[in-house]
Image (cartoon, rainbow, N blue to C red):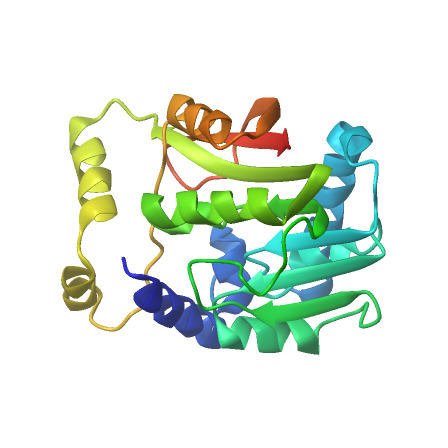
Length: 242
């Protein structure tokens, strides 16, 4: 899936069912998320994250929420950092994030349409967080963004991201279907979906991610299992500094 198609895809979600597209709970599809309930999940997630690894994020000046969507986690981070910036590829997600922004003095939202984060200088953030975002893009984009995380992270800053490692089902049919989904070229996906939004799920094996981070001079703090991935996936949360 190309980056342009990724943007088109999430624009469709933003205009049709934006909150469900971020948290795909089966009972919330079709605009059934209550706004307060939705943002409360972000508060709970970030409070738990800070409780678990917050001692590694000693400086609390500037944080980045990569793949911010409507700002669910960005606003939660504003309770712990002086300034929080959320970036997303979909213009309508950024518009909604601004509409629902409870912390306008602390939270800012930026549209980023490229495979870099060149809108930010080197060594800019004390904390970078990305959850249930990287899994929706192909591996080459994932690695490009991880390199950018390293570039814009301050020395001794903390970056945390989630990513599936592998599919867990033993069914060869389901494994093949997932492999096929992850390798279909954009024209085929467009024909197959007939204009409907598509949730692309991708994984990179844990050992490959660890090797990639070390090769790019990241200092890995922690690798922990989590379940923040759709369907039959084993997902991990990676924490690193530099």
